[in-house]
Length: 132
Picture 1: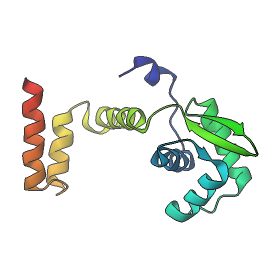
Picture 2: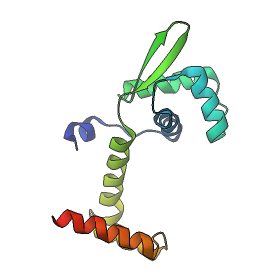
Picture 3: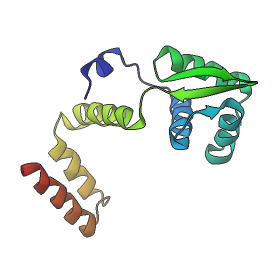
């Protein structure tokens, strides 16, 4: 993972996270009116256009999106990937909650019933592949 990503990164607010998730879920650049509708339909967030534009400016300052105009519409283009941000968050959570131990994280997931026996077998397979 890119070390600069961690050093320059500022965490997203809850609203910024929802907006980024909506952008990432589209898999392509999204017109702002479509983004507003997606936020309303999928996340039950009835944000005004000015609110979304304000959050997009903040996300742009943080290096997550770039906005541009094409014809009469403005678009949002993701700069950072969802996977990159998710890995950063997971790494931070493992460091904070589990003192850097992924073993403790897996143990916590197993103890709270979040991993079935079938999923445990898949995890074993993934771990076995790491040994190669």
